[in-house]
Amino acid sequence: MTLTFIILRPITQYNWVECINLRVSEEQERRHAIAPNVTSLAQAYGEPWWVPLGIYADDKMVGFVMYGRRPGSDINYIMRFMVDARYQGLGYGRAGLAAVIERIRQEDGGEIQLDYDPNDPVAVRLYTSAGFQVIGEVEDGVLAQLSG
Image (cartoon, rainbow, N blue to C red; front, side, top):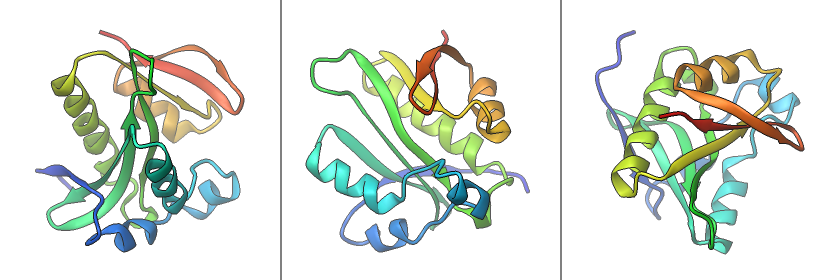
């Protein structure tokens, strides 16, 4: 499959149900690799500096991303990133990640960090191919920063 266009859209009263119905693979669920989207939306409600967005291919939500900057911080952080199991392996993850990186850079150009499980080969491949480099460890994985 060749991707032509990915767009990030805000989560609103019109698409939040579609968002919470997205699911990761059974293996990712077993490993608790990614928080459920409903948890992320609740967090964005309580911590309004997080920006929750649907990852769309045409008019279909294929994934979810949430990023932001904690108060007092100068680092942009990608808190959540997921692609629905039905759409994994089709390039939507790479395209969605590129779209959120571009959005953050257009907004303020600051540093971008995220964390991931170094034992997840898909996450390692996705984030390192986008230019993220490990800069430390966190409770459940590694902290990585986008170089350049």
